[in-house]
Amino acid sequence: MTQWSSLEKDCLNCQKCGLCSTRRHVVFGAGNPQAPVLFVGEGPGEREDLEGIPFVGRAGQLLDKLLAAVDLDREKDLYITNMVKCRPPQNRDPKPEEQEACMEWLRQQVALMRPKVVVCLGRIAAMKLIKPDMKITREHGKIFKKGDLLMMATLHPAALLRNPSAKPGAFEDFLRLQRLLQEKSWAGEGLTK
Image (tube, rainbow, N blue to C red; front, top):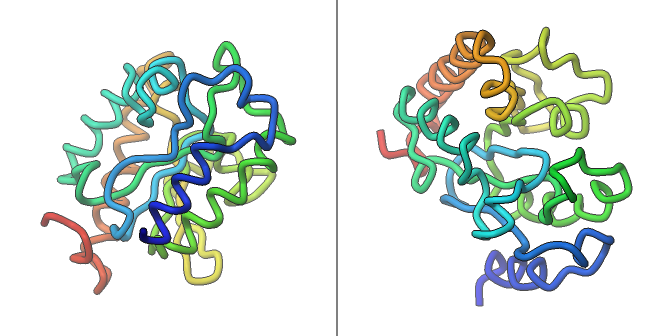
C-alpha cells in the first residue's frame, strides 16, 4: 500500500473532533496527487458529505468551469481537498479547534504530494494557510512565497454564486495561475497541456 493510500485510509477513520459524529463521509480529496497544483477549500458541504468528493455541488460546477477556461482538468492537472475533511453542520465555518484537529491530514497530504502551488479557495483557507490577516477581497490573486511553495488565494466558488459581480476578478486569478504554470519549468509535471 502506498503512503498516499495509507494516509487516506487513516483519515477515513478519523475521530479527532466532533465533526466525525455528524458526517456521512470523510472527504479526503480528489484529483492527481502527483500534480504540481493543490487547491484547498475550507470544508465539505452537503453534497460533498453525501458523495465523499470535494466540490461536487453548484460551487464545484463553477470551479470546474473556471478550471476548464484555463485548460486545467481537476482529475489530471491538480488535486483538490479541504482543510477540514468532514462537513461542519449547516455548512458553517469550521471552528479553530476543528481546523487544528484536521490540519495534520493536510500537512501530510502536502508533504507527500509536494505541490509547487497551493491555491486557497476562500477566506477561511487563506487566513489559515497564507496569513491570519488575509483580506481576500483585496489580496486574492496575489502570489505569496512560503518556503518552496507558491501560494495564492482566490474567492470561494460559493461566494461567487452569491455575488456574481466578483466572477471577473476570480477569473483573473485563474488566468494568473495559468500564466504562472506556463512560465515555470515544472509546469508540465502532471499537467495535460
